[in-house]
Image (cartoon, rainbow over all chains, first blue to last red; front, side):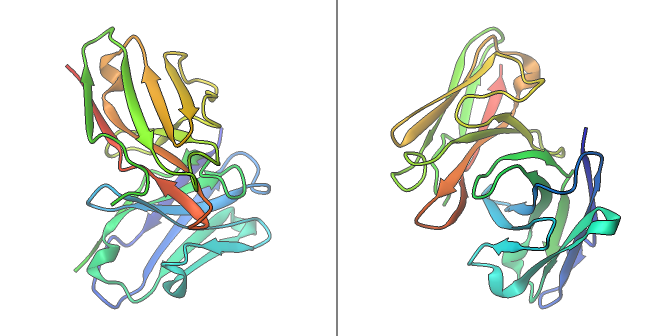
Length: 118
Length: 110
C-alpha cells in the first residue's frame, strides 16, 4: 500500500516561492505520473502538473511559466516550486500518484498542505 | 467556474439512493473516461470510480457510475452516514490538453 506524505511552508507572501515536497512510501516509484493538484477556496480543482520517474514533466499551460516539478529518485520524493506567488495561488495543495498518461486517475493522495499567500 | 458542472449539494436519508451528476462537453466527458473522487475535508481525496464505472479494491459496490454522451453520474445506494463528503468528477479535456474537474457536490446524509 503506497503512502504519500507531503510537507512545506504554508504561509507565504506575494512574490515569494512556494516549495512543497512529497515522499512516496511503499509501492513502485517507476511507471507512474507523480502529480500536483490544488483546490482553491472557491472549491475549484486545478491540475498543476506531473513528472515521471525519468524526469519528464507536463505542466498546466496556465501555470507553466511559474512552476517547476522535480524528482529525487534515490529519496523517493518529488517536489513542486511555484514562483512569483499571488493571492490567487492560495489553495489546498495535494500530491498524488497518477496511474496513466493524460488521465486524471489518481489512486493515492497526500494529506494536503494549506498554502496561504498574503 | 469549473469546466465540468456538478450540483453544489445533494442529500438523502440513510438507506436511500442518491445520484450526483457531472455534465461536460464533447471535448471532455463524451470523449474520455470519467473518474470520481470522495473528499472529506481535512483528509486525502479517495478514488471511488475509474474508467466510468470500475471500483478500486475496497470501494463498496454501493457506489456505481455511468456515462452517456456529455454527462456522467455517480450513484450511491444504501446511503450511510459515513458517505457524507464532497464528491467530484474528473476527466481529460482534448481542447484544453489537460485534466478538468467538476466543482464538487457536497453530500449531506440527513
